Image (tube, rainbow, N blue to C red; front, side):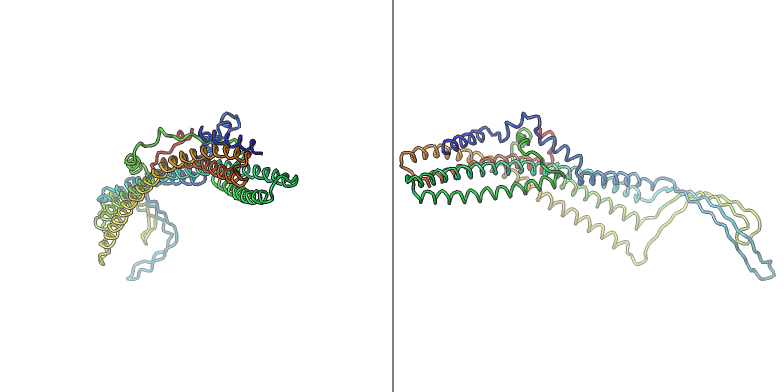
Length: 437
């Protein structure tokens, strides 16, 4: 059991040193790459489809906003029965009146209301596109995290099973020695105690893997399939910024949440202009009217009229509520600008934390790989000393457990580095499918 486990430990350490958790799977034709998985996800995810529909709807509303500058056609027709009792020795009338009217109204000027409405609709469409890009970034990061975590949990379960199998074999060997009279019962008890701990780690690892599978299915809308065929992608080091200041600058420029807050401020300004025009200024229209009447309004016979007029219209509430409406719009702008300033601070913090998370993950991964290598060498020496009688079985089992834990931590740290890198790209708003290849 010992040499077998030692060979396994050396193999694990060598794999970690190479930084290739699934390197042998990459060449497999069945390999499910992260790029392919995310590409399918982006084509089918419901939040992305909803964002696409939001963009399409906003585009239609933007086109609709130009309607204020197009002529308005009103058609009206009526037919019925009318009786008039006129008195004053005037003959009463009783007839079926008919009326057809066609009216065309062309707005000449509204002091900026329609143009402001067009600006608002255009900005809303742009905001919808930014939200779509943000949704795409968010869904990609969720998919990447679920994919990588599934690889991690499967890897950790493999380590836990290896530890359990090895300790179980060691326990059986010590028990056999006791049966032959050459071993110690205390060694068997120590081995069983270590085995119980290994069983518990394996159970926890199995539970974590099931949860990771559930998360994957929730994100991708389908089961994970063969985890061994999943390939950990390379970290896109060439796409990462070289300094923290660069990361913050890119995030403040490209982050979708921040850009949406900035557009909301522009929308609020356009709404103020529209409110001023609607509440404090008149509208001027050119009106063409065609009216055809027969036996209408107590007048027997046919009547046709046409007219072209310029109309000015001004509505003002004498309670001066227009002032309240304008102040409300101005307060709305103050609120939006405050939220934008807060969003800048939040995005800056996210960029700093993601940068530090990446730095920490890299350093932690390096140290854990080094620890795993040291423990592997220590275990080899401990086994030799055990054969010479200078170490107890407990020392060897403890060393084996420490090596397994260190190897598990090192494997997990490799995933942490990749996850942190993709998270930083997402916060900067620059995460693309090309980064996953």
